[in-house]
Picture 1 (cartoon, rainbow, N blue to C red):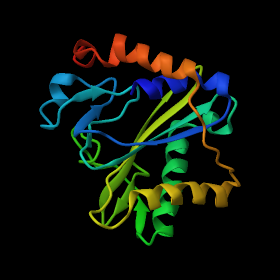
Picture 2 (cartoon, one colour):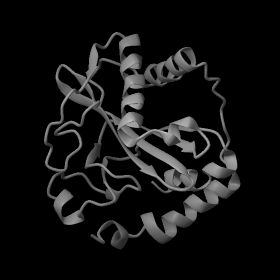
Picture 3 (cartoon, rainbow, N blue to C red):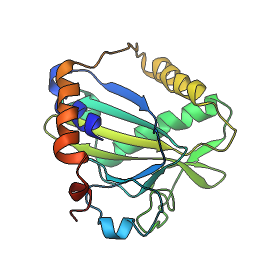
Length: 209
């Protein structure tokens, strides 16, 4: 969470979109920055329970595939309305799943989830066999746009490394993108470390609402 916030703050300096795939070293759960800790704590036994810098609902991280996108203000994606941004993102993932032989679709109507992201669905969430398998949350600031996403893959249906490669391939094919590996600047890693110390590493921050 700290690294994602640091990447967002640095978006004006690096000036290009960043896509980060990452995993979890232990089971955990994250929840939207405006949610109440006392409420979300009743929805899952997973701990640690961490507040995200984005909105949205409770997301379990006990086998999911997580990713982050950061767009600087100068990028056309930044100017999209939140709903249009969400649709573009999940259309991308939908095409990725189709490429890998998984017959997904985008949700046409919302379903109430009582604060848990994968218990319900928002319009344009990715569904497989009528169950939500991909969702995301967004935050737009003067620095740029941060998107944090989670995929809950069907058991045994996909390989994570193959899926990540397909995400890149679909974007390259559809939008002509040329991906490059990017070494994190020292300033980004230092800011992430500061945010861990002063914010995300403090239990009182996560419990403040």
